[in-house]
Image (cartoon, helix red, strand yellow):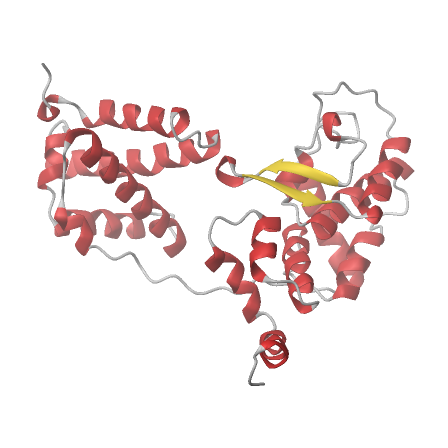
Length: 309
């Protein structure tokens, strides 16, 4: 019988990754992120200790070992940001929790480790008029009509339904023509259902009528100039050109339309829980960042809703 002290750390990591993809059904990208973060940690500790790493070694690590890893990551030629270091530390904690459940491995030293401070960022939303202008303006008057319709449809999905650019680009012909709702699989394999406004349906239908390529149901609906799958960089480049024309700030990006979707809903009286579901956020604290975009909205909600107001 193999005891846990005889199991190499690399083998334990493979078992953990199979657990994430199989039992927890996390997305391929999420599992890959765990793989990269924990592999970086295990490679550092292997070199740090100077011998092959077994999971019994992970039990013995001291706070200084974990801090040395974080310090190393910050001293690299391309140092990691505070957010990335926090993500790595979170992955390592998740790995240790699994090791404890599976093999009874515990390391109290990890509890003493605090990640670097992360600058608190507030989502950069556009104004309502700026959002509409960004969607409806063309940066190139020589565009073929179907290309212009494609850009409008995709950006309308980001603003009208709160989609991430990757979610919009990955829509397949199975989802078209759009109905009253759309089921999406977002980050971490989390499913959500978003309502589709008539204006979003119209933008998509206008694009589909003009699309010059015949596609199968499994094909992604947004296509590039020569018929290949549309790349996110193409739309990002388009938006950069548009913000120059419209005089919008550098924060005007395809993703800022998703921020604008949430911010404008909140300003119109939408509640945070509903907005959380529409955006597909796992934690309400992520959605709460939008309350800081316009604190006057919260004051009005408080004034109108509180029984003693």
